[in-house]
Image 1 (cartoon, helix red, strand yellow):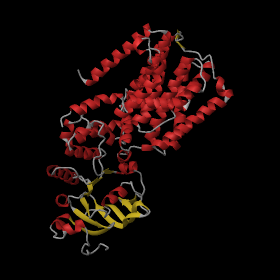
Image 2 (cartoon, rainbow over the protein chains, first blue to last red):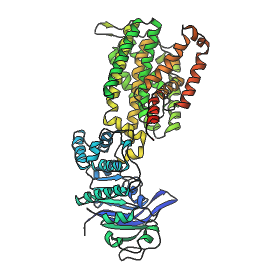
Image 3 (cartoon, rainbow over the protein chains, first blue to last red):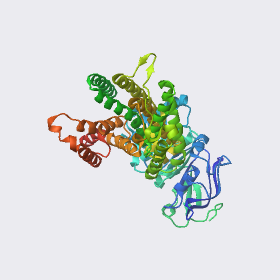
Image 4 (tube, rainbow over the protein chains, first blue to last red):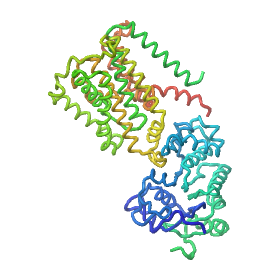
Length: 248
Length: 321
């Protein structure tokens, strides 16, 4: 079994005192794998990513990265640690060019390093190179998602958090994005993904974590879950069957 | 011809035309042109704060005033003009940081009121601290610069001197906005949370934009003090801050040349209307403020993005559906 890189230990977090989403959530993410977070709406999938990336501070419990507690660390510090986040929806700065969007992604890097890093990303995404001087808002949905991922990769993150990468993309482009994530994982990047397009995402993932009401309800290999006749019920809500090692 | 080259050619032609027009203009017209350039320094700075960093400020006239008073006191004490410029700029930058640090915790209309309060406070200091500022009597006999034996005492020489200063300031801002800092300003204006997730230090960049905007106003204040040769608190009232904000919005907030168009409209247009010698425009001598007010209202209704957004509108209309 791959080593744990991220751990949530009885984490309680939410958007206000009265709105608790993560309810003593305990889970882990393993190095070099694609871990897929699934569950019904409101289960806390995106909240896990936001808490991990410091956008929400846990009220109790510990979030650990490589064994170190990272509760409440700033986004800047987390980026420096090697965690990058691609939030849900369109995340580009539409009024800026593709090049300038990439440069923003590397704003925390030393100036001298930036051109080389941008070249690295362009080598991986030839389509972005073709559009380098275009305004970001003129790109197609698929190109924009490539640019978002490319921008996150500028910092050579060890962990990539990605929220709903398939939103607004055609089925062909969804496959392209998933293939890209798979390639990243093969190259050693740990990916933690939230995705509504569960069947497609499971095909490209190593492991699936099912959240229900802010708690981990199921932890299974993705390939196993893909063949589970109960998959739709798990995704849409309802109680998951008891699994050894996971608290109900 | 590429868009960049076309823009450069237009800019050089515009500057050449301005230089030529000033050479043949009356003394009062040269004064008005110089005054427009001086205000433009402050509105360029305000555009950085409002248009690029997305922060609302109603205190730009206070920084303009601080620059002017620093210049008046320093120039009268015999400090050379070229030394006074950085002193005033840095003073406003520091005051901008000191104000911005607590004030930028709030945004939009709350920030507008915080900066407005600052403007009122600075105005009261200028009016009441007579020993330092001369109070309502102001400070007179502010000298114009002489640099390396070249005197800029004359109205036309001072105009060219101010124009050179403005071009240098604009070039510095142009460079800044095309640097990673400028892109960070644009990012936090478009979406601060998104910018933060990329590692943009929102507090630091917002504060920086605010302080640089204040420093630009301070530099403008130095040129203003030497232009008018006498300063008193009146021109630094918060109504001047409103006028500067209007200039930025009318021209096109967040567009580099927006303040140029806006400042021309706000400073120059009323004077042109008021003093028009064209027979068919003579009625404007009485009605110019009404016409001006209606023009601004109409502009804000139909072109909320400012005059420079007209081109975008046409482009959108022509775009295939």
